[in-house]
Length: 191
Image (cartoon, rainbow, N blue to C red; front, top):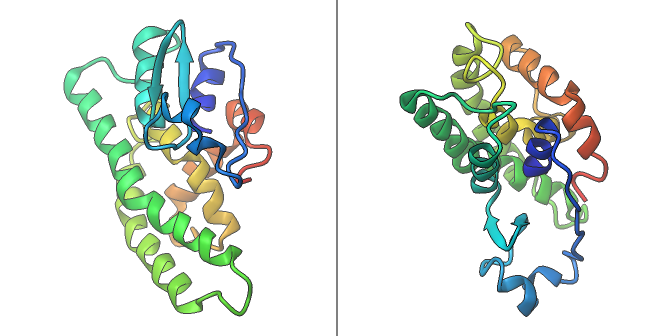
């Protein structure tokens, strides 16, 4: 979804190919030739292929710099990458863990695990709140760092993460999920 948001923000045409993930289509030989980890997404363009959404998004930013979704100064670009990494390594795992646990049948679901992962998320929110006190977006202007968080901020609402004590995070999440690019790609997420 994050790469589709970038494609929409840059007004780039694309064909979306849906894989049957529950039946492990992403583990078939043809797909593993594109991504040996068997994960989505994979971006294929003019014979080149890139996988992992953060790398797909950087590729698109490098190849199609307008409209810009990244700062130009090297230090700021590095800080943007740090936010993307922080999102992927710190923020996403507990969101996905709660979502996964919530999808289990009642008799298999662990309220303790859900509470544990929500507490992990809660411990991360002050970092975002403090950073967003003086800006609307992580880098000041809307960037791929914000896009990295967008679908997972939307999921936070669905899994019951409370932003009430974090007004800057709440406004940021609202701005991100109200963008036309997100509105156009969110249907069916998560599948």
